[in-house]
Length: 168
Image 1 (cartoon, rainbow, N blue to C red):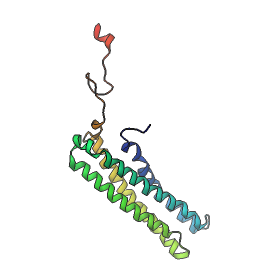
Image 2: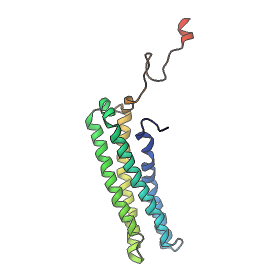
Image 3: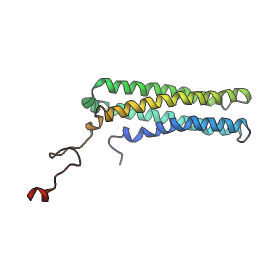
């Protein structure tokens, strides 16, 4: 069974990947330049970049699927700002993924591609943190979770009454 809402369950993967990939790219680039790893190892980083791009796309799609319901609670502007930031992130990740592919080129071109990938990873990380921050603001400042919170007649979710205590 999938969680409902699905979007909050998925968004942590792209944020985690965006945080780890620049470090991994730097370590791999240094190891390849020192001969500790073969240049073909860079393909692992390219595969992780593709995973990041896919996870950002899935997070964006699930967010759009849940937009109308949350917009009834939060309003249009904060959601639109979050969505636009996520779309920018997707394009940045696609660009970084293409750049990472140049790290597979031979000799100097590959070295330059690997260095550019490290820089691109930093840019992607900054954008991902911005998207994560705006998503957190939707939940914690604007009450987006209320669109899915279960309420009882006795108050917020989990705040049921103690019948035995009420009869005393």
